[in-house]
Amino acid sequence: MPSLPVLVLNSGSSSIKFSVYEAENGERRKLHEGAVDGIGTDQGSFWIKDADGNKLVDQTPALPNRSVAFRLVADALHSGDFPAPAAIGHRVVCGGPTVQENQIITPALIDEIERYTDFAPLHTPIAVYIMREALRLFPGIPNFAILDTYFHRTMPEVVTHMPIREEYSAMGVRRYGYHGISYESIVYQLEPNVPEKLIVAHLGNGASISAIRNGKCLDTSMGLTPTGGIISGTRTGDIDPGVLLFILRKIAETEPSATAAADKLETAVSKKAGLLGVSGLSNDMRDLREAIKGGNAKARLAVDKFTWTIAKWIGSYVAELGGLDMLVFTGGIGENDIASRAEICAGLGTLGILVDAARNNVRGEATISAAGSPVTVRVIPPAEDLMIVNHVVRLLG
Image 1 (cartoon, rainbow, N blue to C red):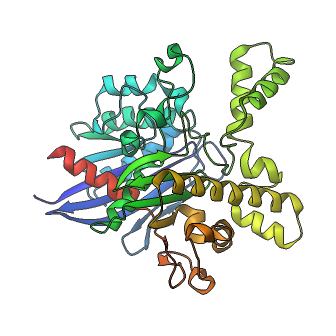
Image 2 (cartoon, rainbow, N blue to C red; image 1 turned 90 degrees about the vertical axis):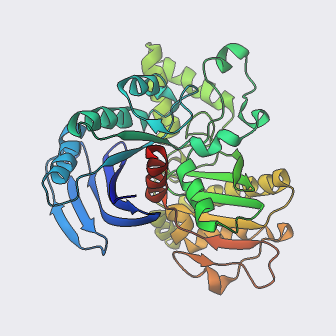
């Protein structure tokens, strides 16, 4: 195939990350990457780096809204200083029950994805906006929706079906799972030697775990929304529904509007809970580790809650898989927090998970299991942008 520049767009609540890859004859080469950060704050930044990490653009513009932010990206890619994209891949967190396959973006598809904003309220609104703007600002260029939920579509119904009345299931309430592009990229990097029984822990500000059998997802921790599953930076993870009812009733005492009360509840469980909520300090593991050194008991509790919960999920997935061949840590915490990996694995020796302290004293890709450990334990950075490019090329073909 001829050289094909592919733009990858990954939007968040206050940032737009992007990269440009050259795809040619099965080869993939990153040309540039960049980001617009701090949207809606007074600390905006816009940068673009080449493949060697050299900054080609380094600005601190005013970023009052996402329109201004995305226009910066579009203008840079139209300037002639960078390769103009021949195709664009968008990371889409959730398409709801009716959009489960990666596919070309049309206005009708965007409308359908927007119907299920409540399933990923921190991600879908900005993704919908960026998709619409990309169709407008890059006319004639094919755009593709690459779903975080796509990898999890192989989960059996006993896993995806919620214990609720059918009327709610018919509305699309089920377990979808997220971080799927990350998980898929780990499987891709392990090929052709993908272990039969694999657990991957994607640990970052958002955290989840997946059980993978023969390269296909069997189960994952996140549910209807990314708030489900394990405790993460600002999210509760799974929690007794009675707790939500209690908080909602307390909110309703001073907030008569049902919609406003629901919004406050969402903030309580998705933006002010998790590591931040327990510690009362920060959602950043680096800050919490520093606080622990100073004897901060709440920071210690938050981190212990995090590592204890993950160890429990790993144990349950070993049972579900009927054993384990490999455990992989990925994501910002999974790759870089040596102590978290050690604490998670410390009580898992009976499951054959043995970590060597010296091998674990590393950041980035490594094998950290002890010699003779029945289970191989590895650290592998995700390659989400690369997976999006692969899907775009496949769909174009």
